[in-house]
Length: 207
Image 1: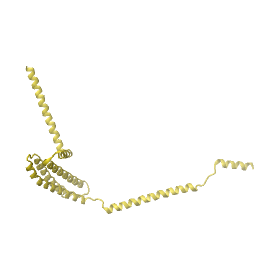
Image 2 (image 1 turned 30 degrees about the vertical axis):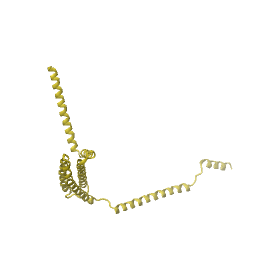
Image 3 (image 1 turned 180 degrees about the vertical axis):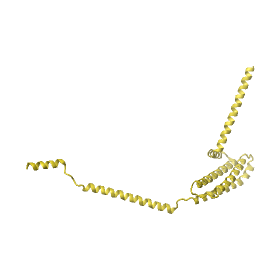
């Protein structure tokens, strides 16, 4: 009887240890996914795609907000690496991101709302706030784009003309070289062969 009790206790302890281990692994994976923006965005888009009802609208707003913040961060990083405008843009975007993070927390809270009527009432205001953040990010990206030294239509047209001119000159040079080569082959004097010269010398000696 005591042996059975010890076996039962051992199995129970092993089961508890396994459950605790699985819980720790799952929590570690969740934290890692949350820290990885790409994985978190992919999972959020998947949840939005397979959800339904008001929750799907909330998840769609979170996806839109996250994509806007990522695009704004990419624009600020590009301006910092290149010759684009800097100034107050990084500081302004930090403020935009702080507002976006706070808004995302509100949206995450709305996901847990079980009353569909209450959630439907909160959605218009949340959508308006997301639109405001997206509009701010677009203005910031426009400022970065206008400050980057990008090629204009006139510059590209002039560059196209220069390339065409160089290609035409190269083609003309190749044709002239081929013409000269053909001329040398055509007017190259023929040299008498060694056999013919020997026969001529033999005839002169005999006569």
